[in-house]
Length: 122
Image 1 (cartoon, rainbow, N blue to C red):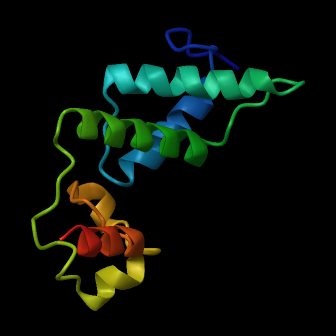
Image 2 (cartoon, rainbow, N blue to C red; image 1 turned 180 degrees about the horizontal axis):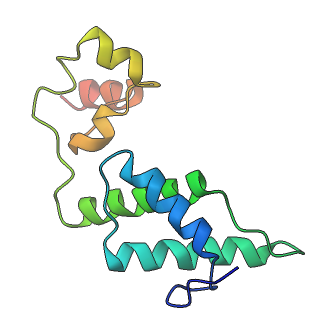
């Protein structure tokens, strides 16, 4: 089978096609810089095994999406509305595994210890 020679590690064209298909299901069209970084990461994983074994298409797609989120965060484009952590519909709450919203908003999250120290400081 032919390899995709413009990507690190020369993955099989079928694997590249499967990853693209997986991303296209979610409306994502790969951009070159994060796409190449994703394949470099996947290649590093593949050669870390005794016998070279590439991650699955969904795993590589997940790596690509993670790199996109990191790029968005570095460009200050990963933001939610101010009240997004206060107003969450039930259907959205059911989809969220916990409460990851404060991590995206860049507001300081006060813990019980922080509250105690701020009360004693006043």
